[in-house]
Image 1 (cartoon, rainbow, N blue to C red):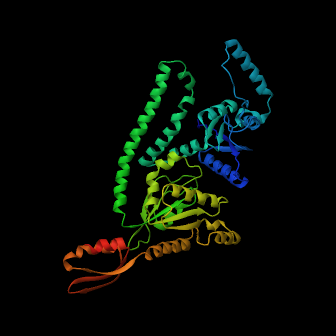
Image 2: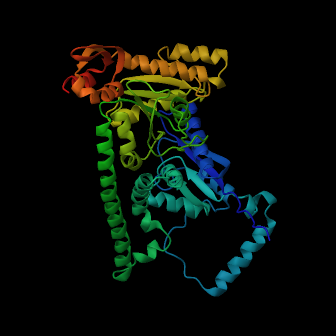
Image 3: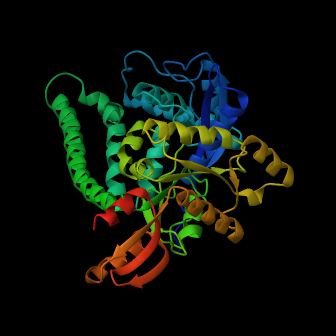
Length: 449
């Protein structure tokens, strides 16, 4: 008998447009939330939006919008207040029969199968706000942070990424444990209930401490590898999620990195050599994508992948030029890099996905960003031109010098070819005479040999 496919969860998006946020940015935020929800495998069936001077302390949105939201989910739109009513089996049976009669009178669009089962709010919710919305809508409630953390959890592949995401999830879940099913009963009175809740929290704290200790060992190993590469030319691709960084990484290095049209497809740092290889060799690294309102716990958890940007010799800011919100995405990227202290690293602006633009859009883009490089990761000529720009960037910092390698130290020749570009080579009675171009640091190291 064939298996029945589980129904796709139906979601309603909720957003509040606060003062200082224009209509375009607000709609862009909701559209991005829709893409996040789609990445989780949900179907967006509606949006509830409201302009307010501030978020409602109890439910984020006002009473009228709450009722509008409840119509889409089958809830009452009201939050039960006061002490729980005394129940009896007779009363429960009578109310159940009454609800069945009302359900039969409802029109087809109000049937359970047509209702949204998930409410996703484009703001970070407090535990009480989430609980109030659940009670008013009778649906599962997620906030933006919870959605992003869940996506990271699903996409994490390496041991390090899984540990980093688990820390972020535990930090997110810990303060909400009181609000989980049965949480109210645990806190009534003194004794075993309180002890169990505290025990759960202690387990979370212990697990976070254990994960941080294990990550520290991994990061120490990564620091050693980075130190070994410190004299090499390093390029880091940075930018908004789904801007095309992995496609450029594959095009520049020929590596089989994952390329997918989804948010946060890359969570692990990949380091590969620019192809065809240059002398000295240039290393290219891909990094985790940024997003608006990226939870601070995830920024902290993925410090190791962001360190690639901090320690790079050149940053390539990758922007999806075909996205209407590309300017806001670029500002988010710059904001995150400022946060980690990497804004001073030399950079090139790459306006990617140019194959999706017409001539007028290209002209407008060049007018806005005359310093930018308009390209497509799928264009062989564009990638070759970018490769040449990267090489030229490093060439400007190189100096030319002559080295004499005595015949007794010919083993150093391999190191010279690895860390410098040999312009000419000749031989005399003193040894092998090389004219090279190299970065000042690499040259000083060679001259000390």
